[in-house]
Image (cartoon, rainbow, N blue to C red; front, side, top):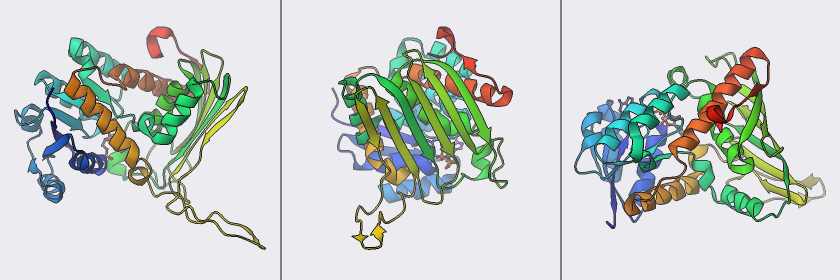
Length: 335
Ligand SMILES: NC(=O)c1ccc[n+]([C@@H]2O[C@H](COP(=O)([O-])OP(=O)(O)OC[C@H]3O[C@@H](n4cnc5c(N)ncnc54)[C@H](O)[C@@H]3O)[C@@H](O)[C@H]2O)c1
């Protein structure tokens, strides 16, 4: 087994920069190359991290100087970039969502064949230390039988409209993380009911907020609450309520200092600004798991099948919001 994984980052945008820095800081990884058709963006990011850059994505995906790639390009490019890289023998950490349609994921899985295990899908929240602890304690039975799960996820501000145009909408772009979380915490989902809202007229999308009810095959129900804006910062909370207790992940703040005096008690400071700050440790743990599996040749997790299941739930949520009906999922479609 090689000691270090030589990695190229494909896409020098918001999440590409997070991954590039995380790779630079990992002792079993080497950031070799940053690729982006925007040569200035690629060179700017690579220069700060001591890597090479290129505006030729295809060359980076197949380069003999790299063992693995992180696909952080816009969502419609995830499947073609992943297939090219896997075809050239690389391991791939592919950002979420896998694609904009389940049919495209199925075609990708068919094309990957026996190599599907080389692909990890970037559901970074599974690797957040607090989420991992909650999941382990739920599995250990500490809350008894899980009855209700609440997942609140609000971004501080909407992304630019160029991003929104290719994002696939709130369910596939944003809720997808929470759909994966729901599966992670309550298992297979039997039905989805979603309500969308358009709250901010400046957001050029069908919905910029949503509330979903997911009924698990276990009987547990998960509620997901999303918004593209939150004046207090990045709002990330999870509660798992069971017959024997409740586990909770509270919002994190830059400061944990509180004043208690005659006028009351204070919890000062806003929430952490955004995903980079809140999930820094999750991205590092995600990369660590990816490197370990790539170097040892074991199957990656979360898998492309996990990516498919979350996308199928996102498609069902879109249909539910559009039609006002509850969508029942068949085993073949979404679990
Ligand atoms: N897991 C997470 O927490 C997380 C967070 C943010 C974004 N994402 C996902 O990552 C992807 C990128 O999001 P972002 O916010 O970084 O977007 P972004 O718009 O900031 O960056 C995308 C970059 O890809 C580049 N690009 C365009 N075509 C390319 C090509 N052919 N080859 C290589 N690069 C190309 C663009 O020039 C841009 O620099 C999206 O699919 C998004 O869903 C995941």
